[in-house]
Amino acid sequence: MNAIFDKTELFNKLSSLHYVIGTLLVATLYVSICNVAFTEGSFFHVSNYTVSLFGKYLCYALLALAVDLVWGFCGILSLGHGAFFALGGYAMGMYLMRQIGDRGVYGHPELPDFMVFLNWNELPWYWAGSDSPIWMVITVLALPGLLAFVFGSLAFRSRVSGVYLSIMTQALTYALMLAFFRNEMGFGGNNGLTDFKDIFGFSLQSDTTKLMLFICTSIALAFGYLVSYFIMQSKMGKVVMAIRDAENRVRFTGYQPYQYKVTIFVISAMLAGLAGALYVPQVGIINPSEFSPINSIEIVIWVAIGGRGSLYGALIGAIIVSYAKTRFTAIMPEAWLFALGGLFILVTLLLPKGIAGMAPKIYQSLQTRMTKNKESESW
Image 1 (tube, rainbow, N blue to C red):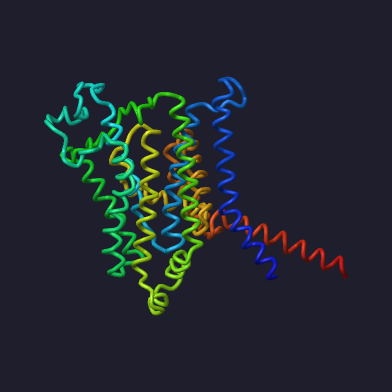
Image 2 (image 1 turned 120 degrees about the vertical axis):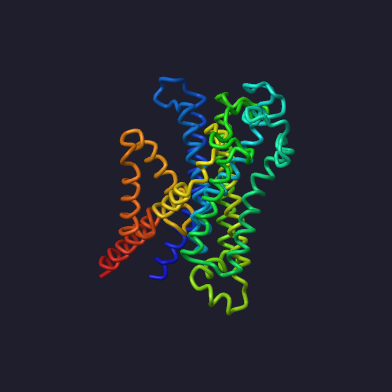
């Protein structure tokens, strides 16, 4: 039985690293080659629309990975990770807006069109440096990380947890949504930031640029997965999981749980911000609706369906549910939310560890059956 258990553990480790990275590599190569090497009309051709769609799914997978890091491994049910995702997206959106230059509707070399429309005469101070790619990369990670650090420090030091913490995270993203809807905030109000043209000097309308964005997203997801995996394999990861299972015992042994919770919360927020930054150039818009609480709840459903606490389960859940949403919102848009809710209930009742929890069970069942067969043959 111990041997079976060890092989099951080995299966989990292989599945969560080699298989995921390998699958991601193969899928990226397949999509890239089929997009470039085969022409339209060919059975193997992957269209530019599909490439952008897959890129968007990978952004969602990175976002789900960030939520799984805090919920599945640390027990922090965040219903506000959409805020970190949107902040990363707005940081990228500000950079892309500055790249438009005088090619906007009003032809102003410095001010985005919405500022000209609102009779603004100069850029707000917080837009300073937004035309720099280095500034953009720093803010994509720093803004979500800083917000997570401030919020986490206050909440975890005060030992706020459970449903109260979930409500606070949801209130946070809702407050940000209301703030970003206001025109005087300087982020485009209801319309947000859009009409992007270039990124790093390359046209966003170019097929090559779209393919490169997809590849970059795949690399970012692999990077995020490796970071999450090695954190969970480290001493810090063991402490984080111990906090999830018995926080008081961890505190009595001399550790400071809030320090670990803040650290993992900040890392998770930065991954979510990176996902938002890669999402914006591929969909061409960022607006306050990304802060909507329902978006954050949907992320949690991805993780629950895929299987929280397994890393690769979050990826599976995000991709499957996002694909289903694309398909079913076209077929029956009004019934999609009911279908999503029903799926969540079914998985919660029948598969508490999600889809990812099925594979080790099947593997262990097969191993048990093979062992019994060998024992019966030996008799």
